[in-house]
Image (cartoon, rainbow over all chains, first blue to last red; front, side):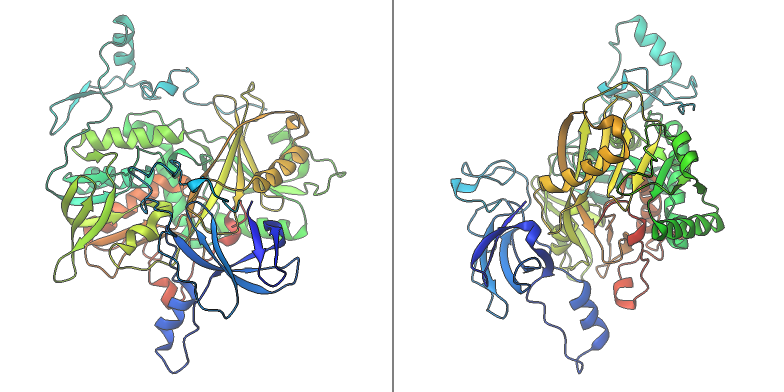
Length: 125
Length: 456
C-alpha cells in the first residue's frame, strides 16, 4: 500500500483514500486535427514505462480533487506530488535512482535486486 | 463426489525430470539435437523402467543451452509459456526451426511461473470463445504432444453468483458459450455444494451463493511443466532457448523492416521478431518505436500450507474477488486482484490479498485457520478491452503477442499456435484475426472485462 501526499490537503494519507486516475499530461486532441487516429492515441496509447511515470490521483475519500504525482514504476517510490494544471516537474528518466531500466543485469550496490530500498531513504510505501 | 483423476500424483514431477506419457506409450527413445549433438531421451514407460533399473543415471539435459548464432529466421522475445509455445508450433507446424527464444531471466520465471494455473474457455464473445476453446482443445492432448506431463487436470471451474446481477450475467455467458459449442452449465446452490463440498451455501453470509456456472472441461495444469515441456520439445526440434540474455534494443533496417535485436550477448539478426514479453511488452515495443495500448499492473497470488486433498475443483467469484484451487502438492492456490496503479515492482499491496482472504474465509469456513505460506506478484499487461493482442504491427517483420492481462496461462497452447501461424504466414490465423493491434483505432473491441475473475 502506498502513502500518498495530497497537495491540496497538504497531508500524507494511505492509498485507500485515493483513486488512481491514469497517466497524466495527456492532452485531448482538438477537433480540427485528424480525429480518428489522434483520439485513439489519446484514449488508449500509454507510455507505461519502466522508470518515472507521471500519473493522476484523485483524493476520493478526502477533498475529492485530482492532482498529479511522479512515481518510479519499479520501486513504486514517489518523487513528486503537484497540483493539477502545474507543469511536469523536471525529473530524470530514472528518477536519479540509477535503476537498470530493463530489470536485468547488475544493479548498483545501493539498490536491492528488486529495485527497492534505494539509498536507504523514504520509499513512500 | 469423485475427485477427477490428476496426473502426476506419482510425486516425481517436482524434479522436472519425470513424466511418462500419461497413456504409457512406449515410443522410440531418442531425438537428436540439431546443434549440440546431445541426445534427448523420450519419456515412456520403457524409459522409466530402464532408468529405474540403473539408478536414473541415463537422463540427459531437457533442453540445450547453445551459444547464439549470428542470425536466425525468427527471434522470439520472452521464454514464457506463450513464447516457447510459439517457437514449438513454428517448428512443428510451419517447418521453421531456425529460431531463438531470448529470455532476460530464466525460463518461465515471469508470469508463467507466477500464475494460478487455471484453464477455462467460458468467455462471452464469439472471438474469445474461439481463441480460448482452441487452447482448451490443445490442452487436452498436450502431454502426449509434448511427450511431457503438463499435469492437465480438467477438474471443473465453478464461477459463483451471489446476487441477481451475477446470475443474469452468468446465464448470459452460459447461453453464449453453448451457442459457441463451449460447455458451461448452471448449478443450483445445492448442486454447487455437491460439486464442491467445502463451499458454504448458507443464506446467513454477507454474499450468499445463489448458484454457479460450471465448465467441466476447465481445470488446472502445472505451470512450470508447461514452460519446461515446450522448451524441451522446441529444443528437440532445433530451437535455441537463450536464457539470461536481455534484449536491449530492436534494430530496424533503412526500409523500416526489423533487422534483429540488440542483446546483452551482442547483436542477433532476424528476419522476423515476435515480442511475447507479457508485462514488459510496452518496454520492448518502445525499442521499435511502437506505442502500445497497454498498462502493466501488479497481480498477486498466495498459497497456503499444504494439506490433504480436500478441494476437488476450481472455484471463482467475481463479486467477492476470490478464486481458489488446490495444487497436487496440497497447497491452496489463491488469486487476488490487481493493484490500482501500474507498476513493474512484481509485488503488490497487503490490502489486496487481505481482501481476497476475507472472501475465501467466508466462502470456505474450513480454511479459516489455514496459514498462508507464500505470496508473490507478477506484472500483467492489461489492454483497454481486456482482450489480448495477437497481431502484426506497423513495423514489417515485427509481431506482438500480449495483453493477456490477468488470465493468459489458460490460453498458452492456443496463443502459441495461432501466433506461430501469424509469424510464419505474415497474416493472422482466422482465430486471432480479430485480436489485432488496430482494433483500438477502428473501435472493434472485444470487451471481455466481465469475463475476468479478478478486478482489473
